[in-house]
Image (cartoon, rainbow, N blue to C red; front, side, top):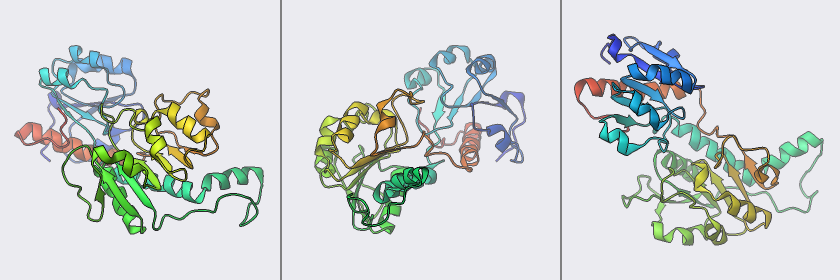
Length: 322
């Protein structure tokens, strides 16, 4: 990485949580960094920014106040908050953080799979009640194992591919779907065409959503999709909340039309206390933490520094969206 010390190449970061500046300061020759934590602070610094690292604090109205902006490095893989048409018209490059937390999200999806199959959420509830519930003590379905079960992964990108390899290693049968017609990258995974998705849902024991939020995936899990699932099947969502029609999910869980579900993302975040999702006994919930990892800043800065160098040299940008 070439050294960049001119003030014009200062990296501006806007995020409430991730400390990109601290990670940059560990890297010899890295550019100086100004980091802010609020939208109001971002409004103050945006006129000076050529390189901006940002995620959910971004608003498209900021573009009119950013005459020098050349590169936006998203801290997340999701970029639905950015107006790509406006960015392209201004010749502002946008790159995402695809792959930065692929291992974490895949492992979180596996944890949710295991929680559902072994009903670990019941064990935690019993622990709080000091209630011993051993084998044969309750008239409940038997605990499941993943070996031999069919998992359908919707979204065979970096995260989906990694999860598929883990599931194969556990002895699961794996099928996967991507909206691109390009063949899948993981040997041993059966490819599902988008037009055959509901038929594949009817064969799956577990459905895991790892896809981006797009016009094609918004509301993908709707009433028709839940009706296609087997009554003993489970849904896991580590994609975006709006991929799932929450009203349809609530109805399916209340009617025991599916065995259970696990969600990490929601249509509205933070999830309001009044949401009926909180009260569903066959639902496991985490608070949009699947991508959380102690290595996140390190991985994002790797992508960022590659892209700063690409801007200098005219080389290809990594994870370029616009």
